[in-house]
Image (cartoon, rainbow, N blue to C red; front, side):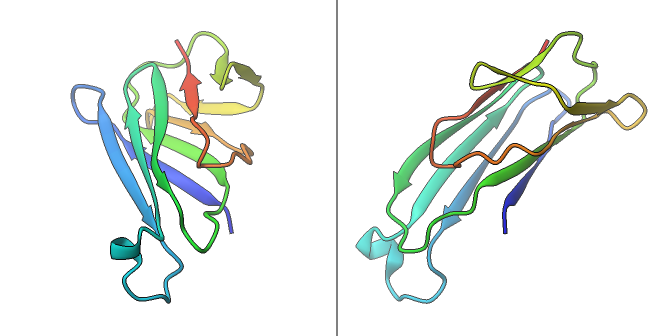
Length: 116
């Protein structure tokens, strides 16, 4: 089951978040380092990830979509994901939502999404 990352920008067009992922069954996964920890940052022109640790006994699912709410300006140019053009994206002007879907990205890799 892939992940959809939901981002809610604040009034300054900024958001941060984190994922902690372990196998959901083993004891002391944090103490033993058997987990994955990923940080997210987003602003009005880009979304970035940074993997702090990648040692979960259960692989983390791929990222299917990033949905950014509160983006107050429609992207005028091409959206890129790790410097590759993303042809299918949607922006709802009324709801101020940017949807980047069908990504199928390994979340443990560094991810940079950009738009202008």
